[in-house]
Structures are given as structure tokens and as C-alpha cells.
Length: 176
Ligand SMILES: [Zn+2]
Image (spheres, rainbow, N blue to C red):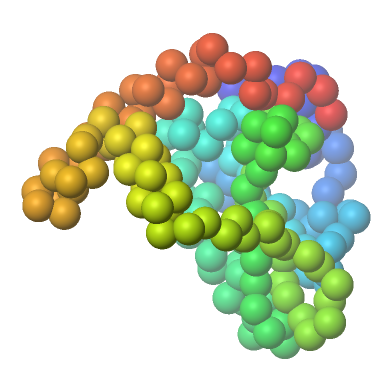
């Protein structure tokens, strides 16, 4: 499935030229033409989807495996000192193309790439309240039961909830 307006679908269908470094039946990787550092690559699926979660298991497995493999290759071949893997999903996260991608950014000393966030300082009381609130919200579990009973992880519930959120929230970018 492809979206005619989507620049990544056009790249996947060879309607737009790209500097491909890897391609198979499910995904492809190409050099970003506005690189953050030398060797910055994006990996995309050939199937159009703004949200990774909605891609098939096979595609998800493939795309992440390819991204991680490319990351290791960049470290070895370009003498990078590290690699940052970045997924921006949703307008609020800075997603600009409504087609999921993983950025693979090789890191070098003094590369001036800044990936960071302000670390909020909280008191012990605030930390405790915060942990309780978030654990309760994302697991539908009483936090005091979490350490006592670690087994029941409601993974399916979280996935279903996620799908509902996707339908309700206008998080998906509509334009390039
Ligand atoms: Zn697309």
C-alpha cells in the first residue's frame, strides 16, 4: 500500500531518486540529504504507515534489525564513536513525513548534534507521587502490586488503548 502524496512512498517506488544503501522486499535505507552527521541514514518500510505499531510484525522486525545492523556498520566503516537511533512519531515529536522512519545518526567527537531534554528535579515525595501516577495510568495496576506480582503484564490492553488513541488524536502529520 502506498500513499500518492507521500514522499517516502515515492522514494520506495523509485519515483524520486535517493541514495540507497540497502533494499529488500519490505524496507529500504537511504542517505539523508540533510545529514546531521556524516553517514546519517533513514530506514523506511515500503508499506505506507505513519505509525510503526500499525505495520506488520514481519516489517517491524525487519526494519529494526536492518537499522541496528546499519548502525554497527557505520561505527565500523566510518569510525563513528557511537550511533543515535531516532524515531519521531507524531507531530508533537517533530515527525514531518507521515511515513514511519528510523534515523540512524553516526556520532563523532564534537559533532554538535544535540539530543537532550531538561531533567526535572523532584523531591522524594514528588517522585513517589509521580511513579504511582504513571505506573497506574500505563499498566492499569496499583503500583504497590507491581513489585509483589510482577507477572501479569497487560500488553494487549496497552496495544488496544494505543490504537484507540491513534484514531482519536490528530497526531499524524498531513503534509511534508
Ligand atoms: Zn508513505
